[in-house]
Length: 499
Image (cartoon, rainbow, N blue to C red; front, side):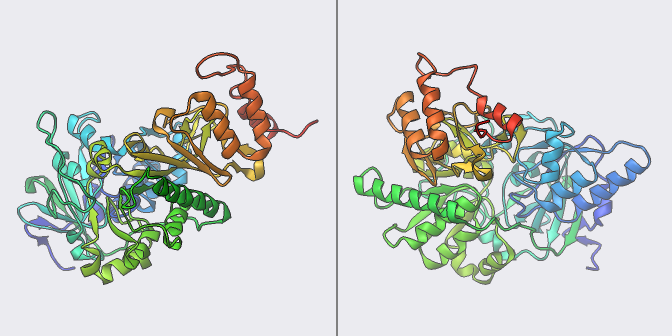
């Protein structure tokens, strides 16, 4: 490396950079689903925390990111007990366990709201930002790497900034980037995006050079974990989704030139994308979504996916390298934006996005739980699902009908935690079938969900629950609405065997 400074900014070791961060600080990190997460400074912070703890001194920080920070951030900080508070999303088991043990505070927040919450000061002062970039110029232009997320907001509002210059990341990633920092109220103007590839900003973010404490040089790829491979259940769900959308086109409810599609993360989303590719009758399509998943690279190369607006390249090494190797092709078809733009309700509604998201469970009246098990234990977080579902032209939620060999039903009388209510849910899909809920009253919704989506051994129980719940617009028996969960805790199955 050999430099003492680059463009006037001092070169620091990771440990020297970590020394700028103190116990109790609110620290913002770049990264979105482990793409462009800092690689060196979080590990140095973990070492710093461990040293303080050996001396009997406290050292924990509050962590703010665009989404999941991945192994180079959440893992190392959780393992060293350096994490006091986390927002807005996490997907690491150790962090999750500490949150559920009430050892780490967690604020689960819509991703579209993080940037504006920083601007409004809802979190207090951001003491430091640690961000990954491919270059920073002397006048404060910061060229980002594989994600944008909340990085422009962090650079603008943080009191001091540490920049990891990652020499592994492709310098032409700036050609994908479209950075627009949304002004605070009342200075906001309409976002002039009428198709997914429209650009409204710059190929770089900006920082006041006087706030930059220094640069840390790295040469390390993103540690993005591949999603679980598709299986028979996810492929059956995907088949139902593909057939439903084709039928909507045939009925004239959707145009043959489809509105942009959004897809949540995971094996079900990947299975749906693969289903679009396999079905020759499914039209070419574009996407306005949060992240570019592994399955989408091949769809772009084959021309089935014509273009994508996202916030992150959350893909394993081989697929990421395919993009790096053919930037002339991909730079015309990919736009990476900040979370306030990728998840903007204004833009989602204007484009008429078709939203495809996964759930943990849903109830018989159409409410969705996508974040908590048994109403109490958080899984990952709400992410951007509600940003899309509550503003989409068509909001579709997908989940297997059962888990644990049938001991757990994904269709229940009442969800003990709701993060997408029935007003934002249009269609539900399991491997059993499709429940189109549009225009149905609650009792009609219940009948359709039970008949088309519930795991068959649970259908009689669910029908009986509705029948015995009495009067009201949305009938419930408050003595029995969580009976399945009580059974699960006592017997290990929501429907225990007789005797």
